[in-house]
Amino acid sequence: MRTLIGERYTSKSSEQKEKVDVDDWMVATIELNSGAVGVIEVTRMAAGASQASGFEVYGSQGANLHGN
Image (cartoon, rainbow, N blue to C red):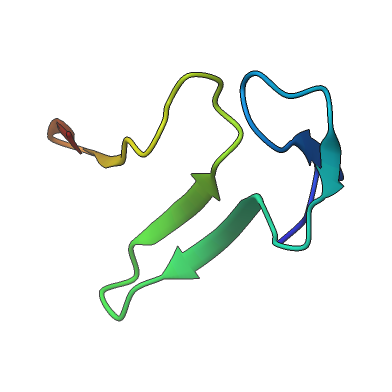
C-alpha cells in the first residue's frame, strides 16, 4: 500500500490543500487453494471517478466485468 498523492485540494473550488493521511493505492498477488494466481489492485486516484466502484475478473474462459 502507498500514499502516492501527498496532498489534495480541500474541495473542487478551493485553492487550499490539505495533507493526505490515507493510502490511495494497493496491489497484492494472491494464490488460491486451487493453484490459481491473481492480482488485486485498488486505487482512488482516477480523476472524475467520484465514488464509482467496480471489478473485473479475467480468466482462461474470458472476462467478467462488474461496476456501478
